[in-house]
Length: 364
Ligand code: FES
Image 1 (cartoon, rainbow, N blue to C red):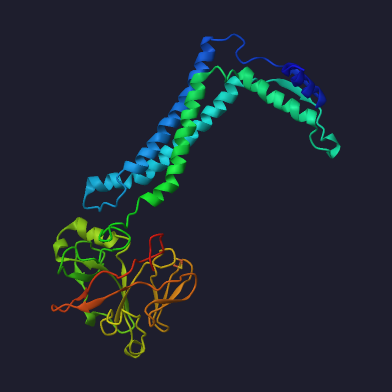
Image 2: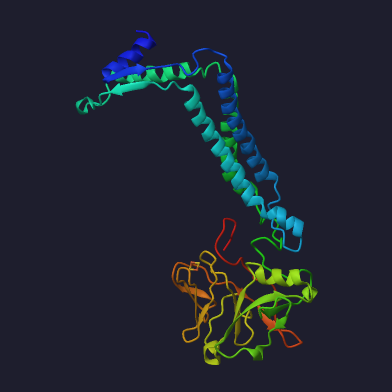
């Protein structure tokens, strides 16, 4: 039986009467056919170009954090994620449009009348399977895909480039290690509390609402049982609006300065290796929750608990910020503090562990 006969027979067996079965382009090589072919190829080509652009951006776009102080560098860095999203999105969209357009323009659109049947629950018979394969082959042949090399090549290019991007994405997580350079002050290991050079003093500064006002913190200014949010400040930033603003905006900078009541402070349990991180009754913990990074801004004076409003994790300020309730599993990182000779509270050095939620390379 020829394929044409099988197509017809398939229709008859399914109770389908083909009323009209026109070739999309009965005359080969017409202008309309070439136009349709070029349109499909253009979408596949666009998919290929944007797919390759995704891979190029993934590897070579400036992805390392650049602080606000470098306006142009920060601008290009901030475009990294949008560029990845746009190139990948356009690539998928173009490929889909190309496939849809090909089906619309080149697959024959017959008009049929079908009596539906489920073969009395027996499933598809051997003959049905053969005839449906014949139908699919027939549609493929009539669409002329075999001789439309431009469409085949551009489709292959589009699928290939998109596939390359899809494979490159998970692989990139293994190749790019932002923590390879442990001293990178903008990496996840460090915060804005890290001195920029040997001997630099980093003060605790409160935010008064006026970015340019530098209000440093003296121990006597905080009542027992009180809590204040503080940010890092170094003398080199005085009068530098951008630097002062950045110190307050940088996500890993906010710290809770807590002054425990003397009785509570006397029974506080210190974490091993952090016995001297507090200054008398003063304890400083990062405000970034160790669960998924919300701000743990609520300090309850009576119970000495710090509450994260996102998922209700609670941390005990009397036990080095240890989680005592909720989904968080790690203690809040503690900032080592002391008082400088000028009477203001300062950080002795950066946190000794990464703050906030876990990430792949994190050791603790
Ligand atoms: S982010 Fe704090 S409990 Fe989830």
